[in-house]
Length: 400
Image (cartoon, rainbow, N blue to C red; front, side):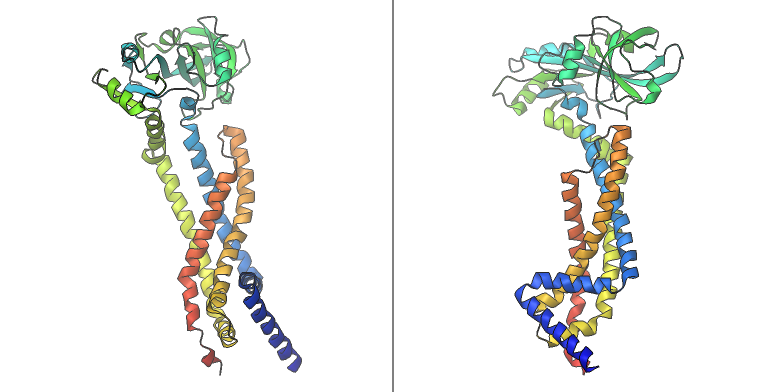
């Protein structure tokens, strides 16, 4: 007994000395020892935290990927202003504007170049199997300086026939064979694949294709004097807001004018804050944060309650309050980080699979890792703030 008491006293002195020299390291050392004393409880707690953080990792990654994907087509175009019908909510809008708007824009003197963009969903029939799928058809004017993607620019040169198109390599299997020269039907028109590009707009249809605007009206059943969206480039030095106001003053009544940033934001807002999917993801993220925080609070609360006498001993030995309270904070941080590591590992595997199958750029990267680390530390510190205050009840006098 005397030997054990002596060893305990020596250990206490060592911790006290360490806390004076390197308080942060000592806090984590004691916190780790406390957590490892009940391994099954620790494993259960880490499992719960890991599941919550895994779900949060998935939701943040998919949300970030969706935020980038919904504007990906616009990202391939170099423009400063856009004109859309006043019913516009997102890219797939079935209303149109008159092509005369493009001429009106050039007449302002601030817009040297205008570009017509058409979009529609058409029936794609594999031939000769006659299997149907939905195709997101994109019609473009002469690329000029508007198309940023060099693959699309060079591919447009291969559209020498009025029955040729560029096919999205990321189209789903339901579209059928994608090899160059493959023939199919859009409505009653037979078309052939002359080249490829990569986009992956799976939320509009099973696949997507690009044709020239001279062929789009025939394939989509549209009026050739109409376009879905007008895109405009400004002269160097022209203020986009001033050019927007000038253009808005001359275009027809039922036409809206956006700057590039406004149009991209409109697209993101529709998908991520208006559509139910985006709202559900945000709510799920909040629930995952709460679940992880509650688990840390429960484990930390049990640890503090069971070790009140030990905290009293530390106070009696003269340990600084920062060291005593720091042990609880360190336990919360270790619980959070201990759950984060397996969550990120499993999440990276699942996200890689999602990206491979959907071409949604959801792979775990530095940005998502930084967000998860910040959220985990914030949740851990919040849980510590709720629980660690109880340590002040540890009274050295109660030991006697």
